[in-house]
Image 1: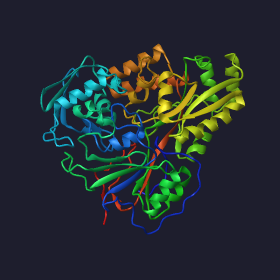
Image 2: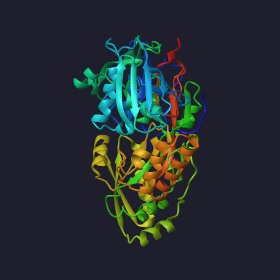
Image 3: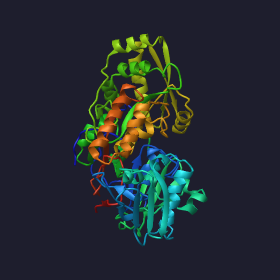
Image 4: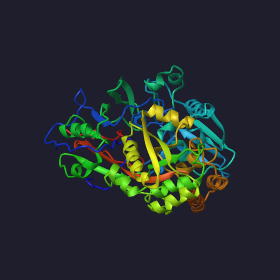
Length: 505
């Protein structure tokens, strides 16, 4: 498992910091009761309502407290979750899910089909961030306590990945929602239940002995919030924590050689990008966006922020994903970039670039890109804000350009539809292309995998040609832990699961 490839995670803080000294022969990171696991993550959840949060730090916790109807296995193939089986009608317009019997909420109350209907209707009716995943679903019903039926007005090839790809589609408890407690004291059905929350410091979960998948082998799981990567690594090496994904990128190789630690990585399905606000001039001109794409040296960005532990990509989907399509229209070509700006009649362009201190990778990239684009006459002024402000500014369109990453992608649609369809819920850059809309809609309707792949690949090439996003790279997921933490596995979807781990004596 001690292999070194690439490094990822939207939550990994990427400051250029000094080395830490290796730890030797210590008892590793037990919780206060001496038996639980302590994990260090790079930031504090903004809230714990899975339907309303979009923060990676939140989902690291929620992955362990909530369940979905179906869920991705290690191979990212959708498998039973709260639904033990399902069937699809011949015309693919009716999906019938049979729920597990005997499932309870963390407070001991009974879970049933009405909870699934409530959760999905909440997302749809309140037009929450994942409402687009129910496009094509015309009715959700519970004919009995153990059956949920989804009726569609068109076939949806990837319905399972839509409703189970990540915990943003978790099944929630109505009382917990209506009391408002879900934001800070969530009630789920997952392997761990909420125990204690110390704002600014940690969240503690305890094992759910009644979990349908079997009681976890550890009694508790504590997430400590440690934004400083060198501090997180030092705490791991000193034995004060058991696990972290907050590893300074320049330290990855050294950590991989530390016999007192385990380090593993997986090529991630996440991607990082730049987006220019096409509601503002001159970014409504594709020549200006293309000039930015040509003016950026992606390899230099990866080296500065990831120490080479990422793969440069000019589309969203990584090579290891079955939906990958090769396409690289932009070389680092400052001459061509300058010509495009001149053709657009743009001189002395100043760009307000929105970055966030919660993801310092964006801050570093902003500095690197400012230096690069200065060579073609563009002045980039990174504006550093907290993540809540970043989200607010993005939603209101109050930016020239921004950078961040997209997480939790599985199916081809996840990488492109919500971000680039004219009516996409996350199309904050206000991109609109009838051709792309047609291709993305065709991809939804296709039932054959090859036909779907062809449609999405064509759409992706057009998106790149128009520079709706300027794609930068796919990071790797890199995590490290104490050898006593057994059965932990790094996943390419970035899901952090502690349900199967145990602490060796």
